[in-house]
Length: 110
Image (cartoon, rainbow, N blue to C red; front, side, top):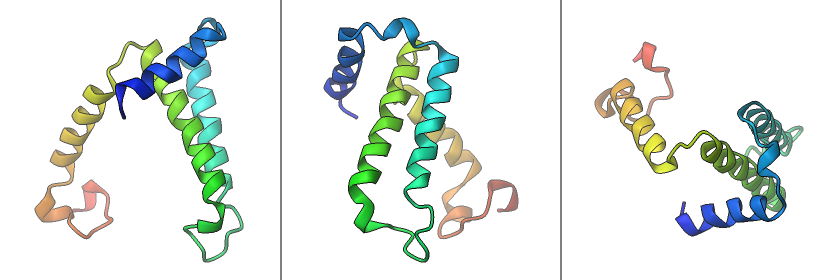
């Protein structure tokens, strides 16, 4: 994600003086609620697991999830690039390419 996008999300929050309400607990709850709304788009979709006809709703809900994630990372003073790259490194250790490629198994079953 570009830094200017992150900055715009935080500026939007700050212009409305909402940072005062953004404690880690409430941000985590909000992020989880928005993730549930994202999942709700798929509810009753039958065999159409991609839901291409619901792309506008998917975009909106995913944006909400990402904006709360940005706000939570900011509140905890975490660098998004740093934590994502660290998680990718750890996942690479748990899911080595030679064992995980083309498999959906959990790392304990590889």
